Image 1 (tube, helix red, strand yellow):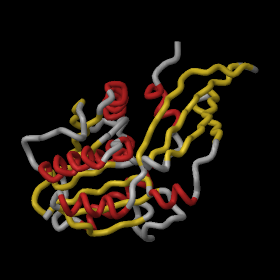
Image 2 (cartoon, helix red, strand yellow):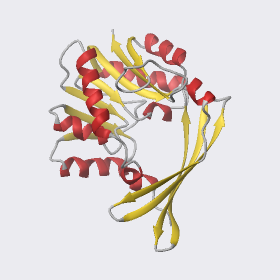
Image 3 (tube, one colour):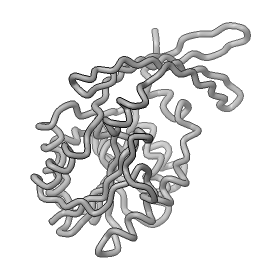
Image 4 (tube, one colour):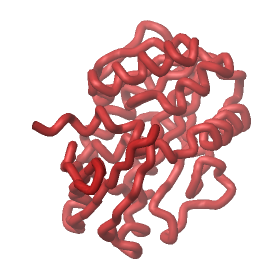
Length: 251
């Protein structure tokens, strides 16, 4: 029986530059916030690759995610790093907290797991309610024009982790009509000369267009402060880069 994909998340994404991305995230928070943020809410925090580093830098972090497995990994990671992070199992389309946050973040295309405008609007309304006045919301998602120009291809990734060798295969189908990609992830472990399949995941994600997000942000009480094709915000959104990043401020 195959184990759940989430059990291997940190192995599969072990080459992700969490440290560098978090440094850029901190710079963006300091640059675009009107006050010094301390309390940060992370939507879809997963195993907390960014959040553990933020907590180590003195930020008070709360994380919300729908996956018990991911939150279990995050809790162990926080304990190993000797930092405190508050976790909640929940739905980012429907949440509330008693206190207010200086900033809300949502990293690594979490909002692409939301398939429709009504649900994304619900999420934005929850974010606005959770923020202090003038608080900022930093998030990323997949950019539609870039995906249509540079369509998904089959990919194979070799992963070496603690003396073990894994192979991840990824194949995607593009649903242009519904602005979705339907991807199958398969993970194999190399044992001697054999290749054993250990997990797989079918993942549908929504890619977004700037005009959709601009409309919803304004409708739910935000103004767009900055956009970019990466978390350092040095270059603006481009059809040559799948990612688009936003800084939005509650008004």
